[in-house]
Image (tube, rainbow, N blue to C red):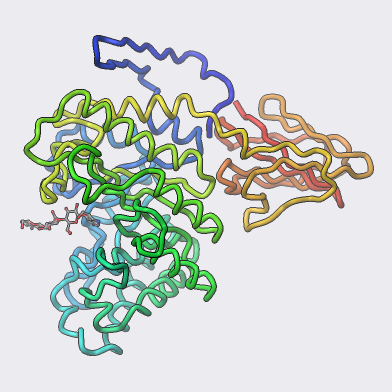
Length: 464
Ligand code: G3I
């Protein structure tokens, strides 16, 4: 949550040296601290070398200091968790879950149903729809069930849409053996296995607009259908593996196009998450300082979507340091925010400075104290545009915050609900004596709703 008041005691010393931008941030000014102040998740993969213990200790130090969400690069995929039929291996996933819990991080599970990294034994059943359905259900029941309550969100289905003329990816054992309805079933089974996990559809090249000819346009039509049919989907993951603007137009995506997808999904009450971000340069070219600074601006533009769109909350980068990145396999390089020596690149600075200076867009918070209606909609009970409305009622209810004490006047007893700026409930209680302590809530900006009889008041407050 963004703190309305300057964070005292933290001094940002910035020195502009020549054309470069060399910054020194106070030790406790981390991506993580500002992500948490803004009520979002910023993270990176734990790559396969981490699981094998082959990394310098600095990698983990950077990871747990800077990030508050984590996902395994390969270790929770089908081939890793069920290498042979009905024989499950959770060791690496358990190691990551332990690490995440020790460091207070959210956990993404990746990925339950994907055409890639499927163990060979599954392909033996590609012509037996009934068996293939039971194989997929058994996998989801066991894997999601094993980490129930520990993995906060799952990529239930990954990359089911083809890259060419938008249609289903036919090169997939699940599609070939079951048909596209494997997707609906996978979500239903995952939800049954862990009703509290957020369930995502994840794919790449979704940053090219939502027109029907674009992949995101085809996906949007499917999401509308899944939502209409009551399929328990909660989010779309945009992998966002994009290439720097000056090298290759083929893969070019744009932040604005991805934002348009976020806004269409918001109409369906579906979240957008950036789940595998890297912004690479073509392998073999010389990457200059100005290229790296431009890359930083592109990283920031994608972060703006997460900060500014109410249904976006996750900014996850597919690696920490350029030294350990899958990008070489895509004939790309230098796509991450730390260099080969685990030193922050300009992209790190761009992200951190943006987080420090982010002001929630005021046009999303319109004070309308004349309205006589209580506007509480959607599942969180808050209008997603975060409109402040006060119900003029007998002995109007008023509230104000001093420190962590919320004072309520004009009501003998009131129901108090506190939401973060993404509209997620973070605190609820009943107030019988005119004031309550907002304990257990971290510093930052929140929306408080006070209801008493027919009176209802929603107000933005800052806790510090
Ligand atoms: O584990 C074996 C090891 O035993 C063997 O010695 C070694 C050499 O053959 O291969 C190792 O497996 C590799 C695996 O990564 C683990 O390191 C596979 O060959 C290699 O293909 C696999 O690549 C992963 C790729 O997914 C597979 O499609 C990348 O690390 C991983 O970054 C990448 O991640 C995907 C996301 O899951 C989905 N979105 C796209 C993204 C990039 O492709």
